[in-house]
Length: 626
Ligand code: AMP
Image (spheres, rainbow, N blue to C red):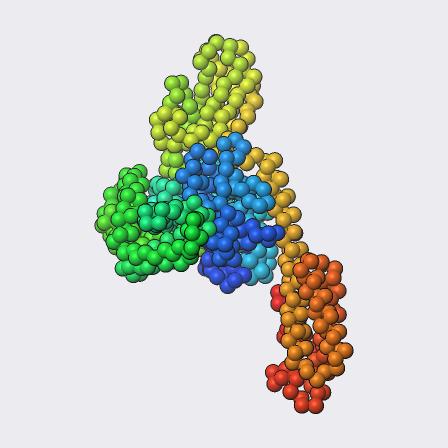
């Protein structure tokens, strides 16, 4: 029976996992890797996802899309910095949203994320032997409502049934605490590629209760890389009067080399960044090279202010959980960036405790997501587990004077429901507009507006008379649903949500259809490319065989040569019908030539490693290898 899986859709990498026999395990991708880079590239008619996309990034910088999670569910003005430093083009979309410019038109971050999810699930389906459709996807605990909705939409666009959106640190805690018997208070410190989360939980006897969560959705390992990029680019600019950041291909190479240097420095005290032929002198056209030594101490000073930013969320999470650091039994490190020695040292000094490194920081989140997927789909092999999570940010409405009136405060256990009654400010007011906000600041404008509710059709009444009941309902995914009713007359008022950043239902439906069509088109394209490759290998084999078959009849060799030439032309012209026809004729002619070869007088033509039978020839060299 098809099982539900857990997916950690990371900024840098993604991981998919499933529970087998009561234990979660990572499902390897089609390349045999446990981790899939969250990278998508458009290359001609092909769409590449994962490592193949990542590998060709420097050659195709404007069409290789990475760290898309930084853009999902965001407003244009929130991501201008990230948008500017990307080698690909990020533009403002409808309703203040974000679009990525691709050779296949503008794409929403949800669509690009859907392509990553699709590959993860397709690969897992092939490995597991059944079609996976039910998934649990993780998000940073500190993701707001819009980012959660957008992640869920990405799942739907990929054609998946998203059972639940769960918080990454909670998922990590699930995988850490699955076998724990006693009670523990733990702090999960999760620093990934693009986001930082800190969560305090109480665990024991299968109960996982989140006490508080905090974080920064603009902080991660990619920011560390950017500091190295900036340092390299500025010193190159000073020396050579050339800004490498203006050349997309050079910028992409700088980003890759910076990440590598950072990773090297987790194990070594110094590293050399060497980028030969990084660019050409614009005047003399002579090649320019970059070579720089970076020590761990220098790197730590480059990221010092970024590291400081983790302090406040940690302190706030402890305060919200009403605990001091000494009450934390274990500090669990999650996310690739916790491998940076300075991060570990900082955690130790903040919490006065040696961090626990027993979980795999790359896999813990996906493993926990798989456990949750198992629980939700009724997998009886998993013991009794209760998970109580919280909402990370306060939700409220805008009231008189531009203030926020909180409805559900941060760290409230979810699901949660709250109803409050509001009224009108003027006589005979026919309707009111309610601005739904998320955030901790006292003034409405400083928080994120999730949508505006228009309650229309209120009968004429003096100011202060109508009773407008507004209900906030946060589901188990942490996604908010709102309703409103005019109470004094008992009449339901009409309500309209004008969400300003997420995609509309119509847009999502269109994207689902497009994604399905593309998945069909991708399959067709794959078959086509395979046929072309098979004919090309056949042609190369044929030409080799001709030179090795000196004593074979000339007319047979001419015939094979002619077919090989035709194959070359058909491949160049991308002529599908000829490619198809030539495969059979060239295969037959080549077989004849190979059969003719061993009958030569010296017997040398066949070569000592020549295939023994036709069957061997076909299987070894001629068949597509898919
Ligand atoms: P995640 O989002 O958890 O996959 O974390 C990805 C981030 O971890 C990226 O910024 C990686 O560069 C970073 N990372 C992975 N391994 C290391 C390492 N050994 N040292 C420093 N950073 C690392």
